[in-house]
Length: 197
Image 1 (cartoon, rainbow, N blue to C red):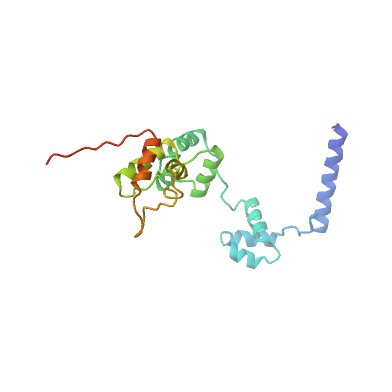
Image 2: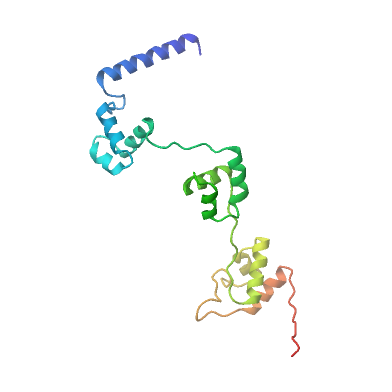
């Protein structure tokens, strides 16, 4: 681009500003904010429901934007390098309540957005215990090796025993044949330990 292009664009912008000031309407057809509307925003600011009723010609989003321009809304504070480092260390294993205590000037939503921006994931809790020690140990091993219950059904050649958690409920039973096949498929060995009485 040439310098003449910049000059022409600057002149066009100045003409548009004069036209908006003269007509009181911006190019999209909305009216320019008046001093009375600004005073209403300053007076009723935190209560947006009342502001929408007081300014019927403005949308809720337009009112929120105008309050931000007037400096009524608390702007988001940028994350410092120290905060990011601390957040990266804590996010995977720390409960949400402790995260909010560690970062008191941040909301839960801002913490979640920052984690998404940084590509952080929370640690998965693992499988819930079933009450059967053999099945619980198998499921713990599957969690460590990142093997799903669908994979266990494939190993044991059962249709949906592990996926559907068919050991639960009144009619549920433990299918030890399937459990033993999966233990062998994962490289485990079943041993019996007798207790002397």
